[in-house]
Structures are given as structure tokens and as C-alpha cells.
Amino acid sequence: MVPTYRRNLALPALAAAVLLAAGCSAGSGGGTPGRSAAPGTALAAVDALTVKGRAPKTGYDREKFGRAWVDVDKNGCGTRDDILKRDLTGVRFADGHCKVASGTLKNDPYTGTTVTYTRGRSKIDIDHVVALSDAWQKGARQWDAETRRRFANDPLNLLAVDAATNRGKSDGDAATWLPPNGAYRCAYVARQVAVKKKYAVWVTEGERDAMKRVLGGCPEQKLP
Image (cartoon, rainbow, N blue to C red; front, side):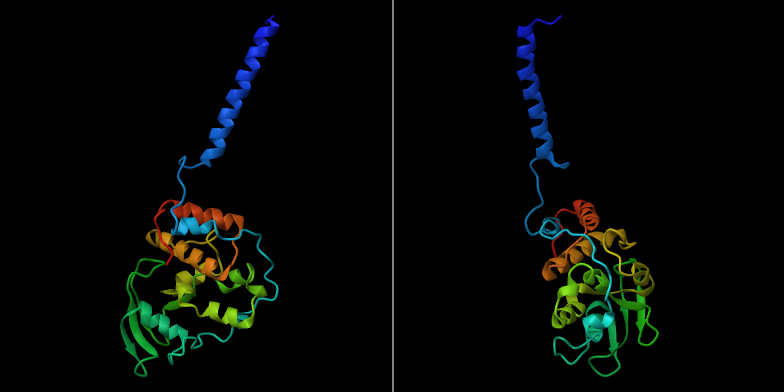
């Protein structure tokens, strides 16, 4: 039998050890102790996003985001052609300066391959990096029509990409779809974070965790 005075001395020591262990565990957060995402990085920006559950898709329609590819910047060209001019090389026009007739997408972001563009027989899509229906379920349903129109035509949220791969993405978020081209995943997720931050589109818990997993491998990645 252990004497009473020895039991009384052992209890405080045991309690102190438990508290010390708990303090170390709480401070580590599962990562490198004492380190956090650097300000201005995409990884840090993930923590500024609101985390909520996905709302129903009820009521979603592409037309809720306005007519496709309008000339929002008043330069005389529709948004689709503006993005083709931005992302393709060797661009040729059908009308002098707006309608892109042909060009080449070198190092397609989603596949890493080269894709040729010919108007009317296009193998290239203009992708909404944050899909319209995904945004609808995470805040856009409450926006006014003009905000939705700006979102659908914002160059920050648009990329020229391989059409077949893009259609496989559908309206997936970072938790359900990432580009097959692994070299582009950090930039892709950073762009999603930037768009969602700009328009206060929320993320699900699984989406946030997926974003952090990708960006944890490139912690210095900046927002576009």
C-alpha cells in the first residue's frame, strides 16, 4: 500500500505533466510549431474565407448570370474573345481586332499540352474557374443581377483551357476536382481562393481543407 503523503505529492506532478502535454498539442495545430502562413499568400487567404455548408442548387440557371460573354469592359469585344486574345498565341482575327479566328494554347493549364483553336471547331473552352452553379450554392443566389453578370465575365475567374478536360470538371470545387496537370494545381487553387475572396463566396469545410492541402505544398504561392 502506498502511503498517503506519497500519493498527495504524486498527484500535482501528474496534473502538471498533463497540462504541459495539452499545451504543446494545442499550440502545434498539426503543423510546424510557431509557423503560420505568410501574409499575402494564397494559403493565408484561405483562412479569410467563410466556411458554410453548400446550399441547394434550387433556382440555378445560367441566365441568372446574364447573357453569355457580354462586353463588360466596353472595349468593343465580348469577354470570350478577350480571354482568347489574352491566353492564346499566334492569334488571327476574323474581323480585324475582336473575333478570334485561330490561335494556339501553349501549355494548357489543365493538361499541360498544346491545343489549337479554330473558330467554329474549337477544342478550347473558356472555363469559369469558380463554376457559376458552385457560386450559386455558396452565396451568389443572394446577389443582384449586376454582381452576377460581373462575376460571370470577370477575367480573374476565366481561363482558356482544353475543352474535354473542362467538361469533365463540370461544376466541381477544389474538394471534388483538380487539374490533371499537377504542376498547375497551386496556381489553380490560388485563383479559386482569389475569386471567392473577391466576391465573398463561401467554401465548404471539405473544400477549405482541400485548398489547404494543395497550398500547403506551395506555401509561398501568391494570389493572382
